[in-house]
Length: 87
Picture 1: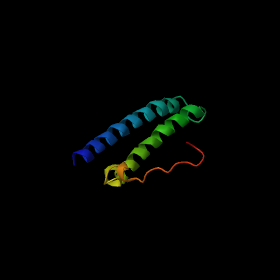
Picture 2 (picture 1 turned 90 degrees about the vertical axis):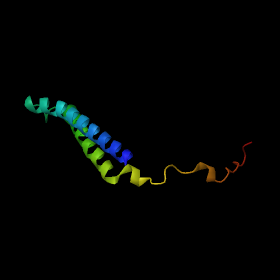
Picture 3 (picture 1 turned 120 degrees about the vertical axis):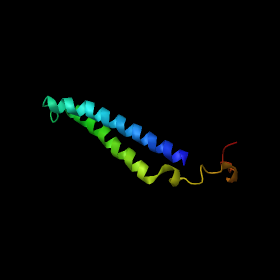
Picture 4 (picture 1 turned 60 degrees about the vertical axis):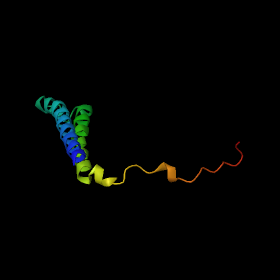
């Protein structure tokens, strides 16, 4: 339970940070009438705005639930076969 709460807190922190960055890029451009003329600034702001969607989508999937058993057990892998022609 603690892991999911920490994940939720991390998602909230990232969402607020990305929204703050998008706001600090897009609003001055819009205020000065440069939103559609400054393609680099608009693109940068929209990238950070899109990151908010990505963070929320990642939370919806649920990272701990996506990998319930943890990392794969490497000790169960078959031994590597030698490559022909190499010593």
